[in-house]
Image (cartoon, rainbow over all chains, first blue to last red; front, side, top):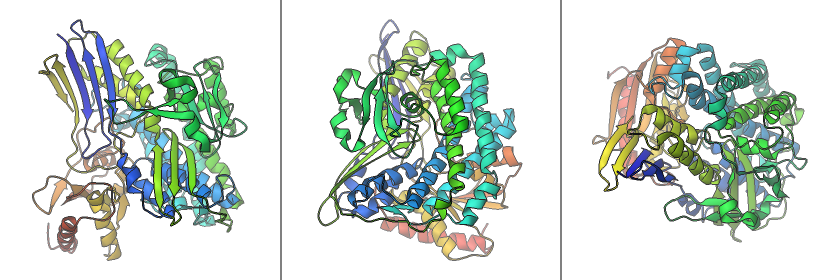
Length: 482
Length: 142
């Protein structure tokens, strides 16, 4: 009997995800789709608002990485105020970098310890009741303590640079509104509250070893799970180095050939198209020169380590060399290796934070520059989950008249669908019922990309994850709730 | 006191609004914090206090607000970045061996669209909730 499987973690308002898998009478996968409700309404919300409000307003898009939206909007507004994306004062650019790398650190640490480590350390078939941070505590309390403290460290860096935990105001058009005081700097160097930045670097190194140990014992799973070739896109520094804050847009194909060769991101519309499909709220971006069918790409840690030539910090570079050696220098197309890449980025973030903390420019007092205003600006940044595009036009009354945002989760729309399809074909197809372990494998595939499923809002009344099996007449055959 | 939610989603910001207003009243012995959503590091904060009050917006309440005693959760959802208060308490208990007396102040919200400011109805609910909470903090209510 033909069946339909639906996995739907429904949040209260929107930003929710849903997986639908149709099986035919023979139990083979007929179709699989991963839907995320996108919040395009936000682009209309900012219309009519003064441009200088955008860096604060856009943080309301997301409860997970508001700093990414804050900085991407600020970069676009740098252009609009005539300063340009790479002409800030040294203090302003380095404060923004500190804010951003602090965010990368806390986000990557949360992802690994809270969302990924339970799968690896407790097993994909482990009881969901313990396959979480509580299970990690029982298994390795020190690791869980590290998770909490690394998150806290990153959050404190954000607080010190953005000024507030919610709706930070640090980045403003043309610069920044505060520097880092010596007291704030010493807090991170000396560890009050703990940990110190040196401790954070040490824990980041240890996290890579955890992944490598798991990989050594589970090569088939880690290498084979949801592995498929794709293009990869990210910002890179002009010299090809990994850079999360600024650079040029580069894409490589599955073999490493450059398919987007270090272009200025202000021209992104010349290179990136967005396909609309009738069944999805979320668009499907693609590289125009390759066309809709072949031009889709991955973004995020896996993509970044495929596009960059090297990592400009010594410990992360060493880890990167080992990572690249595993694929003989070719692009890595193994979805679960995203976690490996994420941990190398975690280490790099910690190293960059230390370098910035020791830079006296952070105590500088030249915070803002002004230039000749223009009516349009594009800002790009590498958010924890991948490339984030912000594009605005204003009128002569300084009001925003157009906003176009392509968020990381949208960029990864097609890869996430491919990953779900892989699980449907290789794990679910032909099975008489859904087990918790099978369900978790769908989540593992999605989780590698760390999409913002819980974006924007939350509160009491959140519904649990629901899995429904339906026959060809839409009757419910099986329903799972957790 | 931890008020959490997204102030850019109208009444979803009831939690932060409540914490900020209480903070401005400088009540002795009360520390107020705000957050978009609860995460694992909030367990560390919870472990340092005798009483923790979580304040959140709620959908579907009949009353303007509810104030309930809560305990550590037995299970934590595996898919989300955000945690429920009960999950934060569970982590505090397991990680720091601390189980503060915890309450959840749930304030009824009415509007959840993208936008700033609370709805008029939510403002009224918030006022009632804060009046109750101040009484509680003075020891007049349990």
